[in-house]
Length: 477
Image 1 (cartoon, rainbow, N blue to C red):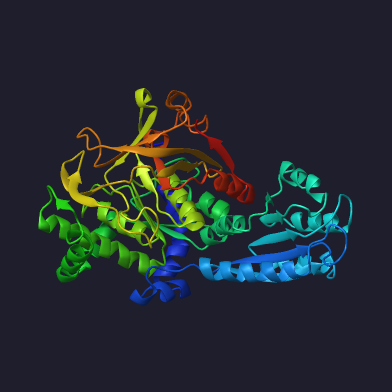
Image 2: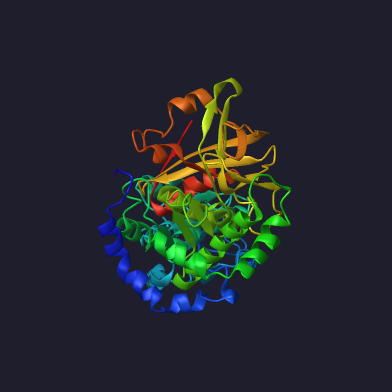
């Protein structure tokens, strides 16, 4: 099967890492307790450098501005909680050749262009830092000299650099957020139940590890059955009542026993993730025994982790990237078009209830059966009208296909999955014809169909992330 990776390859690549985790690696020990759930990522280290003279010299920034930047970044560090700003060299006084060795242990570089003209020392110093090869952001305010006109050449030459000629310091918040993605991915483990599905590259544990640093850990269906049975019925009943039954607007079809079984499966998957130090799970058995995965994936996404249905590795990686960059969960969708309403319609049977992030208010939801089978337990979540969304999928480990839209209608059509919402797009007919943006044309059904939907317009930030990580961005318009 084109979408199913070679199982021998998957098990071979993952066995050593999974074995180490099961034997009790430091990460598993640290995360394998309730006190450390959900698991926290070590902070991304970002090296800050100030380039150019300060003081009373023509076209230079005031000396006090460096202190203001330092205070702003200290506040941002506290606000984000998972970044650490290091360095702070001033070039000149410090020679750039003394700075370069210090970058070795950093995950990225944030350069402030204070002043400088073309061909002078500041530009030469900045070029050396960009050429060091780390993901680099250059923040340059108006009236910082004429050197800016040489900066775009770095991006055109393929350097991993984002240029920010801006007077708005809050732009730093966005770009620092996306600088977390690559180092966080390198610390990520995904439980993959019954093997992955998707593009060949995304299904290769070896390629995913080499390209993104993400480790895929194989889990059998038999393991999930045993884990499910190991959860006490009392704990499952408490989970079902506290997080689902007491908060639901309505319970339509499922019985209490079915709801408890689904809650039991969440606790089983949680235990497996804790034991293996995982931040995400995907399952190609999510509609089989011991219970459908809808509750499990929904709550994991509510908590700021990733639960992805149908073993879709491309969507799983997409959800991880958006989660680390923007702190929002994804809704995996089986979309359809309606050109009469210029709409892309999204629907599926599982959804997070905290689509704006772990600290947001839960959206209204009903507990339903899964549509296709009319069995098990699924969710019907009420999405807010007027919400701007980003629709995306990271495919082949090298391209993000992406579009944006606005939610303008919520429906409950029995022909579709439980959670349904309509988004107004730029040109539905053109998007229909351009589906896949020529990148995933001719792929398997699920790969070509699925997209992940996220609250917020993240188009420009994803383009910036592509520059920092070296992947392409293709708009589906």
